[in-house]
Amino acid sequence: NLDILVNSAGVFIWKGFLDLEPSHWQSTIESNLSAAFFATQAFARQAVAAERQGAVINISSIHGVVGDGGVVPHCASKFGLIGLTEASAEALRGSGVRVNCLSPGAIEPESSGRGSETLKDKVTQGDLAKMCIFLGSDESGNLTGTNINAFGITRPVIASK
Image 1 (cartoon, rainbow, N blue to C red):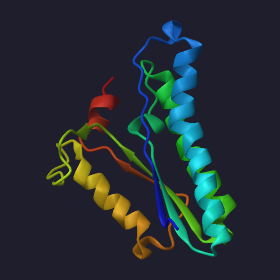
Image 2: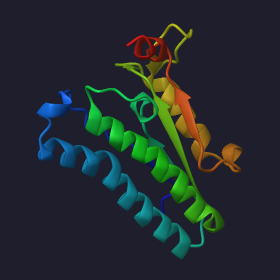
Image 3: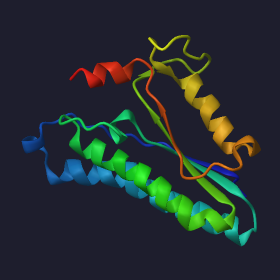
């Protein structure tokens, strides 16, 4: 049995709004949103059948809370993932399955072994791993339906657009 599910997909297509094709939209929504729904549903079914608690952690994006005209399908899917997190958390509240979300800004590549040091740094892979460990642990046992923004230096950059 699984105790923790992390939904972390990130199709990201930079295209102008008028240049987007149906395949761009469909592949992004299917990968970033639909896959998370079906994986969460399957995880919750097995947890309920086994009478076990569990934690689902969805990885959204800064583009799940800040619109960007250059990545419209990505924004739509990641905004949707936050909504899916909140709605799934409510639907599963009585089952013992918690559903939460992390929304990182730009992530420093090759950074799994370290955390960021200041607010002027990008978020690191290590930062996200620590947050996932917390959200999957008993220490976060009363959290469900929450979204944690972890933007690092990315927020001021996007805000200045």
